Amino acid sequence: MTKNSPIITTHWLYENLNDPSLLIIDASLKNPINSKYKEFEKVLPNSLEFDWDAFSDTDSELPHMMPSVEKFTESARVLGVNQDSLIVVYDNMGIYSSARVWWMFRSMGFDNCFVLDGGLLEWLKNGFSTEGAHRKALNMGNFIAKYREELFLDKIDVRRAIEDPNITIVDARNADRFNGKVDEPRINLRRGHIPSSINIPFEDFLIESKLRSNAELKELFSGVDFGSKLVFSCGSGVTACVGALAAVALGFEDVGVYDGSWSEWGMADE
Image (spheres, rainbow, N blue to C red):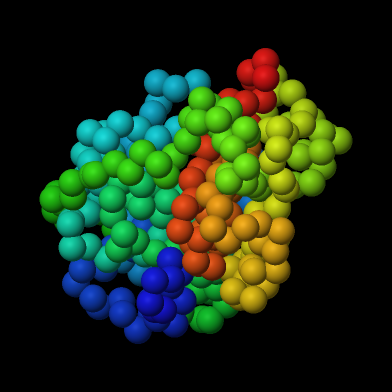
C-alpha cells in the first residue's frame, strides 16, 4: 500500500488477508454494457458481494444513481462495514465497477477504501487462492455516512461547470460515442457530448486491466491544469469513476463525478 494511493496491489492484499479489519467487496456488475464482460465462477477469499440495488436509488429512472445517506448507511451496516474497517473493492473486469464503489464510499466520508489493482484478473494471474462463493456478513456494522456533496454533481452543477474556465469536464466514453459517430448502447439517448468537455476514454487510464503508472497518467492529463477542478462523466456514472481514480492517484485534489452522466444529459434538450 502506497501512502495516499487509492490502489491496493494483489500481493499486498494476499499478505494481509488475515487483517481482522479487512473487508473484501466484490463489486462486479452483472452483464454491464461492455462487450468484454466475462463471468467467473471463482471469487476472492472471504469476499462479500456488493448489492447494487441496495446501494442505489431504485426509484430513479437513471441507472445506479446514488442513494440517500440513510439508505447508504443502512446498506453499509448490513454489509458489516464499521468505522474502522479497511475496505478493498474489486471486480471481475480488472478495474471497472470497483472504482464506482470506491468513489461512493469516498463520497460518504469513508477514506479507508481502496481499489484492487487488476481485480480478479490480476489475482488469478498471480495464482492466488480463490473460493466458490461469497461469504455472508457476520455482524451489523456501525458505519455512519457523512456525505461530501462536492464529489457528485447533478445536471445543474454541470451546466455551471460548462461556463467555468477553472473546471474541466472529462468524458470517459469511447471516442466514437463522444464524437457522435455511433448510437448510444442505451435506447432513447441522442449522440454527442457535453459542451466544452474533453474525451479521455476510461480504457486509456488502464494497461492490462491495471492502472497506468503516474508518468503515463500525467501524459494523459497533459492538457489539463493541475490546479483545476475535474468533473468526470461517462454513460451512467460507472466508468467516470475510473477517471476519478486515475486523477486522485495522480494527485488531483478537486475531483467530481457527474452521477447521471450521458444517461441523463443525453435525454435532456440541452
